[in-house]
Structures are given as structure tokens and as C-alpha cells.
Length: 373
Image (cartoon, rainbow, N blue to C red; front, side, top):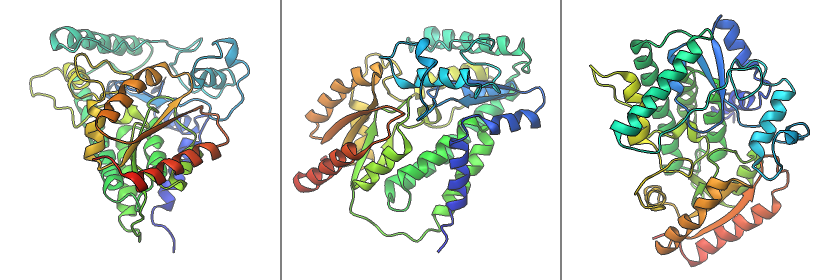
């Protein structure tokens, strides 16, 4: 029997594996004068870019490519993703982008606020958003207009709602929708306008609801630590083959950073609403300052909300934010009697047998001696 979701999965896989960004080139051809602006795959204010006629493009690194010239720009003991991204740029794979952190392209540092007081951090971040819009307009983007930003914020909120519906199926029926499939469909949006990606996600949701599937007695886990550099796709599949249903994760955090829709008041400047959304609705993560909140509390809430049996920490090698956060998160899980295990990876990993055996042993241990209460 043909899987009704197979065509969507293959389309998503083609977008994910489009290393030279042919889809971005096609978008630019269809939108003369439009700018493609690359960014690293954690949070950036994508609605701001769409509102001024730009296509935001998340760059996830080079995967399994050999890094040769990239290592001459960065020391070898940092995480793999910046080195492999430079390798892609030097090879010409990112030439279609009009802006990125490379020579002869527009360069901007998105300075996210560390003070969550709307009168301080919110004002600062709104000024940063306006600065980036002005600089891109000077390079050919459209001027920032309130009505366009309102529409872009609404489109991004609708995209997030579609992704949340996808994630809800993973939580309730993980045997119907594998995390590896959801990974492809969500990551496919890295170089798609919000409305186009929403349609793709909703098409996939409709297709998987027509699937014939049976429940499987796997261990339900939350996977933490892959908010920027992404694990190889086959590593995710290895965890699934080891008997783990990944019911929640921080893959593609840039698509999931804001919880819920961003509401824009009728008399409110939408730039201020976009800034407020990050301050008040942003997820707790190693890449975001949480002020006086308790480290690990949000993770425990996620575990309970997903009815997960345990947590797997999967951080990229040399990822300082994730690896510095991990001991505090593990302490919180231990106090809450939540089983957990950990491993490190690099995006160019090719062998996963050891990780699969470790995940399988964790799965068996949880089944034998109990899960999170």
C-alpha cells in the first residue's frame, strides 16, 4: 500500500538536501529584486525579513562534507557547523544569498536582548529590528511598512500553529508519525516563505491522518541539545530503531522558538509586538537568557506534558551553550526522578552503532526499572 504521506516526505527531503540552494535561486527568479538573507539555524525574526520582501534562509551547515578551507578561518576545537558553513560559502554553494556572514555580502549581527523588561530589552530589540530593516532596504529590500509586517507576523504564527499540530500527533500517536519524518518536513521550511511552508506542513498532517498504523510499545523520550547544529538524519533514525519514540525535541529551534501566536494590538507598532513576542513567548533554551527562572524547570514541564519516560541529551561536540547547560538540566531531572542519558555528535558523523546501543540500553532500563513519574 502506498503511504499517502510519501510524496510530501520526498519533497521535503529534496529541500533539506538542496545544499546549493537551488530552491532559493528559483524563488529569486520568481521574485525579481527580492533578497535572500541567510542566517544560522537558531532564532531570527523571520517575519521582519519577509515583510520587506526578503526570503529568510536557515543554513544548517555542510553535513558530511570534508572541511578543508573552512578550518583555516576557525579553530578546529569549535563546533562543526560554522566551519562547514564557511566551507560551503568558499565552494560557492551559498552564492545565491544576498546577505550572510561572508565576504562581499551584507553582514549583520542580530543582537538579541538579555534584559527582559519591555521598557529596556524590548525597546533595545525593537531598535535592532528597525536597524536591520533600514540596512536591508538600503541594499534593495522594500521599506518596512506596518501592514506588511502585520501580515508577515500573522503568516509566521499560522506556520507555527501548523507545526504545533504536527507535533501534537507525535506526542499522542508517535507510531503514526516518526520524529525523523517530522524533522524533514519542518526543516524543509528553512528556505520557504512562511505561507508556503504552512501549506506543506498541513498537507503532510492531512496525509498522515489517513495512514494505517498500529501502536508500538516504545520508550517515549524528549531529546535536548540540538538547537543549532543538527544531528545527522541517520542518527535520528538510529534512535528510533533502538526503541525510542522522540515525542519532543529542540530540532529546528528557529521554527519553534516562539510559543503561540504573536498578537498585535490594533494601535500597536508591529515591530514592538515582534520584540515582545521574543521576550515573553520565547522558549527556555541554552541559546536564550532566562533571567531569574529556574534552570531545568521548563524541561521538566515538557517531560510531563509529553508523558515522556525519559530524556536524551544529544549535543554537538564543542557546543559550549548546550554542554554548559547540561549539568544543571541533569541535576533538575535527577531531583525529579526523570531517567536520562547523554551523548555528543558532529554533523559529519557517519557511524551510529555505539549511540544506537546506548539508546537501546537506556530504553531497556527504563522499561525494566521505571520511567518518569
